[in-house]
Image (cartoon, rainbow, N blue to C red; front, top):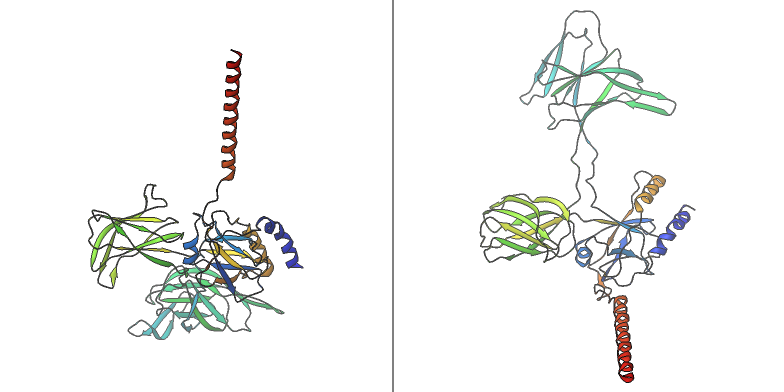
Length: 435
């Protein structure tokens, strides 16, 4: 029933998007999930190479009956946040001693790792609950938090004081009353044993206030760097100017270029400025630089330059001095993703390159959000991919059709001129007869 309702919603979109003649190239679409409701296809260099529209509007998906599917082009995937890694830490139980009067005597190795610890009690009034010393000296990065594991049967709700030190002598308080709890009622369980950290310390002292609970393990929660989607690169050989101070390149496709690197022969150092344009008659536009590009042997070389993504055909490197050996320009981009709804008859094909046909972006963002809410927060369109370099569908797809309306208008105007002229000639003849 749910799929039937969605098909009814998509029917108006299909009526608007029917007809798919006049595409330059087409690629079969394959997927491991043949029954998915939506698919995501990552575009590759062959698609960009055959697209002609500046905004990639002539890239679409058609079904077996050559109907265009509701689709929308999305930018490259954002960096994926990875789950934090957990690192087990050594910890020691400290004896319960009077409040704020604890002298620690520790034995450490040459790397600072704690081998043993003893506490000397000083007589005073009052005492606290369980206390532990956590050895974080082996960590190479600052942890985001400490995760504590207590005995599963323990039930408690208490405040914990968290103190840090780098030498076991001088301590500072990070949390005075950090709430920790572990409760159970029937089958329901509530646990809060994570201690957020904002500073780095070699040692942490954890003290429960007025509670005694068996501790079983301590982990450091270490952040992990987000994983960025892979960038694709294409190398181009340029054409040098007469003074060999500038080099022009022509890109093969409509990729959203956002990185540029220069490949220099041998050990070279030069200053470059990068420019681009989409038409040879347009002025050059600045993209990156000036920057110093160098190469010292095989290992030492400068980094690629970043700029706002742009789809342009023509590129130029301008150097501060003549360069005998022409450099290569390496352009990089993150492939975009075309998401479409499988509302037609498979098999599906991706098509690109047309002077007459264009994809009308369907409002998929809200629909995908609804599908995610129905099927779970982790739901994503099924992964699909195109096969091969594609096959020619219509070799004349990029030829602009004749404007018959304009020809008809000119024909009508010419006919009107001839009629008016003929009428004028007729009047002149009649005038001569009467004279």
